[in-house]
Image 1 (cartoon, rainbow, N blue to C red):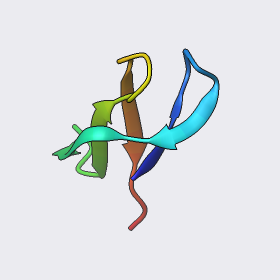
Image 2 (tube, rainbow, N blue to C red; image 1 turned 180 degrees about the vertical axis):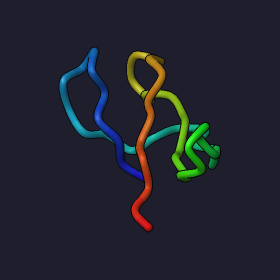
Image 3 (cartoon, rainbow, N blue to C red; image 1 turned 135 degrees about the vertical axis):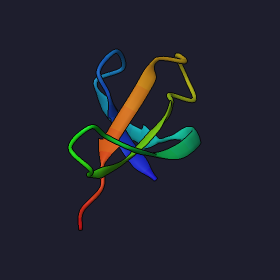
Image 4 (tube, helix red, strand yellow; image 1 turned 45 degrees about the vertical axis):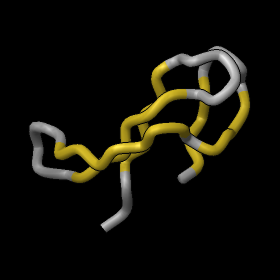
Length: 46
């Protein structure tokens, strides 16, 4: 899954992505940037 890395300022393929549920019940993917290792977060549709 692709997400935006704020450190690299580009969309990249997320590494070690895991599906999580936020406090409001929506689903999101949490992972790391393959280049710099910064945490990435992407809210899923639906």
